[in-house]
Image 1: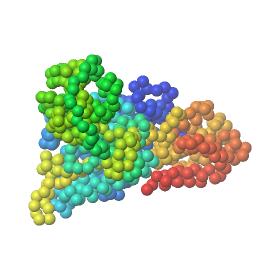
Image 2 (image 1 turned 45 degrees about the vertical axis):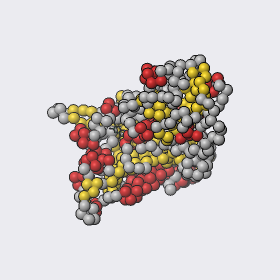
Image 3 (image 1 turned 30 degrees about the horizontal axis):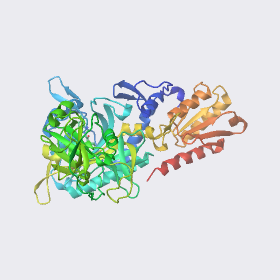
Image 4 (image 1 turned 90 degrees about the vertical axis):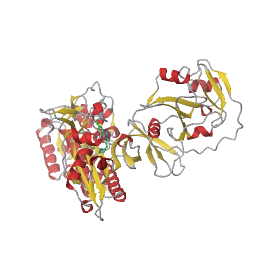
Length: 575
Ligand code: 9G3
């Protein structure tokens, strides 16, 4: 490809709304343009990268016995009503009507339609397991589309659904997908981690893992163990209680005046004690009740864990009015002692505390020498706190480390949630009717491309890993007006193409500095400069985008040299 003919409109300026570097760089490098909020055009270079990721995904899905099909984007509302999800997803579901007034959704995911297909076509255990997948646009009307391709309203997803005859067989399908995902992200040249995750609203029967591309800009916080292979999304990470119950004698409960002291930090300072001696009481509301969650003062509540304990759709911090109605005090003075009208959920650690401090349910007052069991009894004692770096690993008690990541894949065991709702059954070995056991497995293809950039860039632009680069090499003739030089450059370009290397030649009549800046911005892994030395000495300069290393190479050997680098780097990422 000649750069003079390529639609790759590079820009110096940064788009005003861009909040993350991948968005900035994809826009500036001419990979994408915005069509509407959260809806993007993939320009030729951007789409080449997408296609590479899709091809890797396709190969690994096929290797595991996945069968590619194509489901409709337009899905009848009736199926969503049958699963009960037509009303669950509210405004996030793009809805439309046809000319007859029939209702449809633009597919945000395809559990309903695939289950409908399989219930109609599969009768016998002999036809199972089935692994069916597609790579297709998905639609979700996000409240706030953000971060460019990271959270679009239209995005490319690979979604595979597994149908098995029992749980043991589901385990096999799940493991196959887990392995395939590991291979996919390795082959893309990305640093990633599979982590245990919270299944969230989709529910299901058991395990779920998320595949995280590691990047400091990532939205997801994870912890992993230094010692063993435990890794989890912090939403899910289990807290370990290593402390023994305190041996202190219980002192007499006492109210103290704490005027204007409402925060944990202020209270610890005011009483000259550690935050780990305080009990933090957080008032929450769900659609059915008010609850008070208790965690040690130096800990943070994990709202996801609390929501799972409560089993509710909604969870939000109570407003001032609710807090005042409940405690009879201003916010900042809630506590569990003599509190009526709310369920008290205590973190496990709280029950080990002795002579602790809590709010007195009275403005400007706290209680000291509060002892769980003596002064209050929680309705439930559970793990509801956030786990942080430095804490012990729940598997081996090694030390946990914190990191950030971008979720690019997820694997779920669904169990019979959808097969039950839609009646997807088969006849087993004994001729008895059974529900199919399902799994679902997603990869955000467009998000993977954005995540690759978040992980691989510098101040000058993108640094593509070789396996997903839009082209491997750019040939830059320094002076396009110099006919001899241009001829050598074009010869090299032709030879590279013939050798199966993906190459562009920057034949534009621009200053070399402009070409170099664009090459760095777009992030071709290799740049070959054909300058005066090509004629004088028969050499060209080959520069690695990733580390800036430069090699001067004889023209005759240049193709071999480049081919070796390209092949070695792809091989390096092939497990
Ligand atoms: C919806 C809307 C948004 C959604 C969903 C449904 C997320 C929804 C979860 C999944 C689970 C898996 C198959 C591939 C792997 C992930 N957002 N989810 O179900 F109607 Cl509007 O999509 N699906």
